[in-house]
Amino acid sequence: QGNVMYLRYVLPEIEGGAYQEWELEAIPAGLQNYYTDHWKRMRGRDEAVWFEYKLPVVVALTLVEEPISVDLIAEFAKVSDKPRIRGVLQEWREFLYETEVPYQGGQQKRYRVYHDSFRNFLAALEEIKEERVSIKDAQAQITNALAGDLFDA
Image (tube, rainbow, N blue to C red; front, side, top):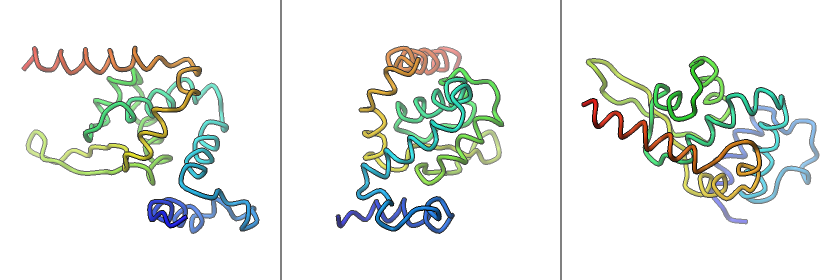
């Protein structure tokens, strides 16, 4: 379909073996279908884990446009287990932009959704609204956390 972003996502997946059991014709056609396929694969592995921490981390990353640290992801997602957050970041790495910024005399990694088309795909999913996650509540948590940081400074 002439979409360079599709190549950016799908070729690394093919190289990593994600579609080795599929026929060429079964690989998702188009970027939106690829996003849908990835979403289903990440969600389908373990429902309890999905709702406990994976979905809240993905929602936090979807709602924030600037790169954020694991600490802020933990606060926004209400997930305190940082190794689990890092695991989610690793699973979604092809969709995330990672950068390092100066922080307290050292460097801090920060993450954001790589491309607006994926953020828009996630934000539009009816499943997010139906899957025990309230976007309004998540936005309120983020707003409260940021406001708290401003008043503490």
